[in-house]
Image (cartoon, rainbow, N blue to C red; front, side):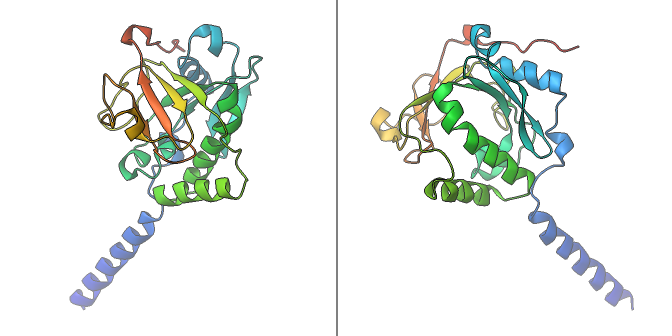
Length: 223
């Protein structure tokens, strides 16, 4: 009887582990911020001449929603770990807070994809499922076509970009559709001195260009 009970317990734990693997993320509370803090952090992504006039989106349990409507066609938001899909480690790293301010073109073309990634993450989709669904919807024309270069600021000194990465450097994100890292000289990803490409060869290829650390912007205190 003891052996049967132990076997049943182990089977139950195994089933729980399998079921848990389908929901690989922390609870929503691990991603949640007060609206005031999230707005301040989002605005720290770019110089105040841009961010104080930008539309600000904040994360809710249903996805991103507009908290402040701007008047300069920029959109600032704080990306969470789902934006790193399909990277398995970063996508599951709930502390990620990536403040970013998209220029008008990126606000129209990149923001919808980021909103979709967040909704898929909140629905418990795996890193691969998130990446695959974004690619599928782009192929079906449900996401705006990336036809030309777009830009985004990531100058926040308060950003957390991944396990062990911390704030890294303030940098520009240049969305160059289908760009290849080899065209920049195959600079190592994460390089501190030379540009490199993330998502090479995809519609959302990004050239990362670090800027002077003196340009880093501290998020305004909300205390």
